[in-house]
Image 1 (cartoon, rainbow, N blue to C red):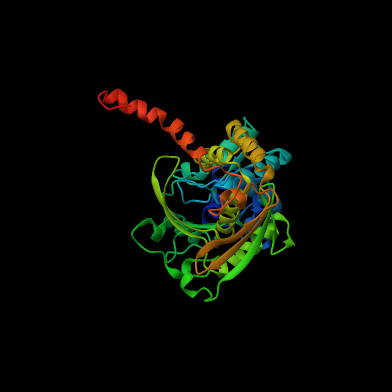
Image 2 (spheres, rainbow, N blue to C red):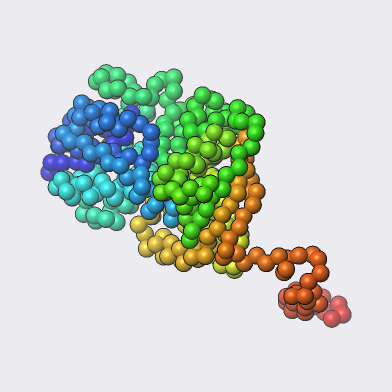
Length: 402
């Protein structure tokens, strides 16, 4: 028998309905847990709403610093991008929420944990893989896979009948998920991949058409693969990301409109704003261009699709993700330096980069006269690398003179 359930609670439509439905269905005590990951909401009001909706207790915890330093920054060190476009803002938040949820369940003596992810999406996988990795015997309840509601519209109607206040409406039925790294929009009017999103939907960034006419130059300093300062001012991880969100967002940077392949097998359309994260990807690449050896850089880049898949699919706690992370972090030891960026109407361009750990030497790269590199050496280098190509041609056409 289940006596206590810890619910990952956001205060949104799905989890607001879930409190009442779980209480009625299981007859259990519902403990709500809301993680402050920088979603920009009045979380005191979220806590009160959880209690008024039927939760016996509500945890609201500030996890922003841990979120950026222990989840976002390691992911940025790996330059993780899913399918070439998605910067994984929702994906990377789920393992931290699930980890803390399990810790609360153990503290409260709860037999079960629950989440508001749908049975069609990726989040159910991300939550539950983390639950089981940390507490193999936990009971997991996923209301979307059990309750009779078949759509968010039916949830809206249920909430109206029972006096549960929700932000979603029949006029704006799309779903949002925001944290310090990004905001996502999906569902409802966005399900038509041909339809352009409404301009009044965006939250974190100014439309590029309305961004300032004058470019903004900023400098970001890196140490061992992590950004540590903006314009020479040292900042902690969450403050630094917040600063870049403001600067990049004001200049229209960070929008992505993607049709992605979900882990469960279907395609879905998602619209994202990741202003600070977009800038950090560009800046990190620029520092790496100076400080990483060619083969090291290429090896790391070959791991990006796999690492990004592991984050997207929900395997943050897996041994393979941890193994790749150890390798990536070892590669980042010399990734230190400063990048100057030009932010202008939705674009982020590298305007300069420097590093005391730089492998770039002007005397080698110059087209002018120098005495270090003997250009005649290139002939033997080319012939040796062409040997297999020449042999292949000779084998296919033995009449060709060698």
